Length: 165
Image (cartoon, rainbow, N blue to C red; front, side):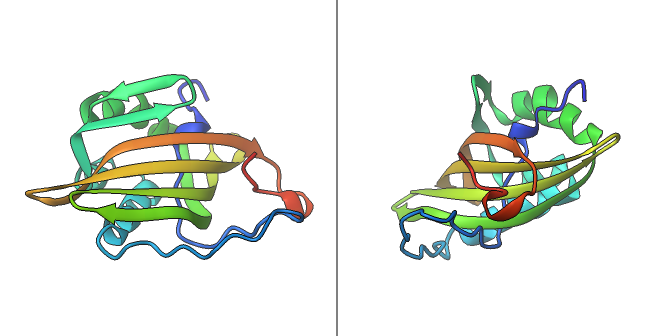
């Protein structure tokens, strides 16, 4: 797990149940304009394909993860994502809750709570994450311009398993 930072790998499209005692949240729907882009992002991550990801990200992509920043798709692909995906044997989004999402003109955003299951060479890793995506409309359609990710490793145990903290 030399290169792998499990926090950098996450997104999802199923429901993540609220922890007991959490206040009920309103249901948020993903705007139709950006839904296909985020679905393709998820599918590309599950396929572990940087080529597919390149189709939905802006070349000027910024990725903020914990205390690290990658500026530009090439920087993210070559310095973080590529080395990490080589160490991942399987990648599956197990859950998703849309916390907030909207489109305003040529800009959109989505905030998601996710659960990701990673199969590594020597272990399985389950992550609970919160992701923020900012998208912009370009001549080629909607592209992901910013990803901000915060995650933690969790163990499936009881009702609180998989809840971001």
